[in-house]
Length: 474
Image (tube, rainbow, N blue to C red; front, side):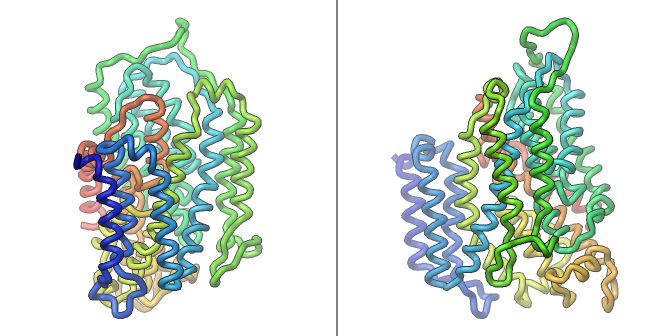
């Protein structure tokens, strides 16, 4: 009986708190919105975490209504009651940009078919994941995840278990893409704001090597315990790998390159200006056109053999739309606090690492990165709206401070925290959820939200994060 009415209790609690909770942080002198406005986001996250486990039938029937309903409620609340229209507009445009790059990557990757009769081994799997980690710096974590997840599942057919998918998320969908700005959205955002393109490679290469070494060790031990032998389907004596649909790789690369068509990076690019902020539409048109075109003119046999379905993308898109919209007051309060004297005084490399990390595990890591970059630069009288000051901050050549190199350490802490912690939960980074949904559609039983954290991210990722913290910031 308790489980049956659990979701309704959540929604009722949300309503009550939203009505009677004009609670404000003590550190904010004139807040725009109450803390109670964050409860739609908390409710949605808790329901994403508990729904498939405790009330699956209700959740699968109504998750779209809940996600979109909570999101629209927050938009109306912040726009009409607090007159914060810009935050809602910004969230909508951010979601459009977010979904536009995913459309071509998801639909084009579904038509790339790799057939192999090779029986895998722990060493071969480890090599595959390391290769995927390198590719994620070229194709982006989302692009590499969509291209490689189906071949990885095929390679391990007959021995597929949840840990294989989760380590794929660790290697390919998150940490592997920390060497270039193309790799992960927060790093790309930093590049747009003025961080030199090669900064990530020079400053984050050593942390990346540590991460790959530790994760490879953890994975090899885990995969060596899997004694099930991979099966081959009508395998000839000669081992072979065949690729079909390679043209889709070209369209994926075009879609990724189109991400650089940002009006903040290319000032002559046509854009929509709202409240002084320029929003792109050229790259979105290009990316959506690629995704729709590839799917209309697809090779149906490749998609059928890949067990392609739109349902994983639909579920991810609806839930992330709700997350983007309910995030509005959460990000507003975070930014307000970061700009208070208490927030600025708390800015040190250790707090930047953990705050940006923990928030990135549950919030969108790109605005989290931007918030802490702006706050840490403000501490030294710099503005993240000035590309030259961002470049000086990244390189540690700021004039007028005793230890200018400390700014590089600050940015390194924010970058590693935002990227590495993204693998701590399914919602920490968009490819995490997509990979999970694709695996579940292929009948792979994945752990629940909390079980993912308790059984995998905390035992495997947390030691790595603590090691990185000690080596780099200790």
